[in-house]
Length: 206
Image (tube, rainbow, N blue to C red):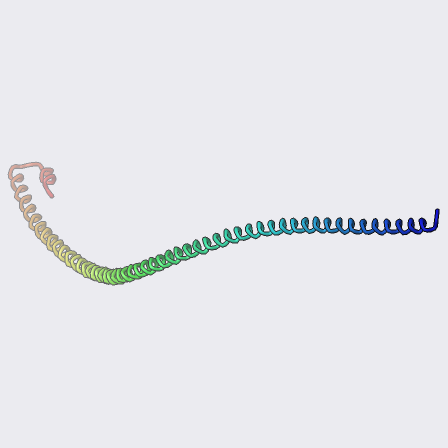
């Protein structure tokens, strides 16, 4: 082979190698660009998914926050209603207690007045009873004294009457004894005149 052809062949091979290297570099760059695009597209898709999930989470959080706020507002309203009702009941209870306390004070005042009146009446009744007992005791004492005096007088009168009666009986007995003696003597004289036996006189003698 001549030298020129060898040199031309060397140049042609070098040119081919240079063109192949450029093609490989261009292909590599193209693949790199495509890969970057795919990576960018995947990255954008991932970011869109993340943004969508974030948006969904945000919406859920907003809805939950709205529910919590609504529940809180309802609880506040319910708390206000409960507080208002408790305040009303407390006020009504205070008024009822004040009215009841006033009523009880009036009742206590009336009962105290009745108790004082009853105590005065009881004291008066006790004084009257004690006075009646004193009068009764005094009357009984006077009655006992009067009865004792009457008994003494009756005993004196009875004794005097008995004494006079005995004196009368003695006088009558003396008179009777004299009359009986005279009658006996007269009877003996009569029997003597009739010749009667002596035992008749003895039998008829007192």
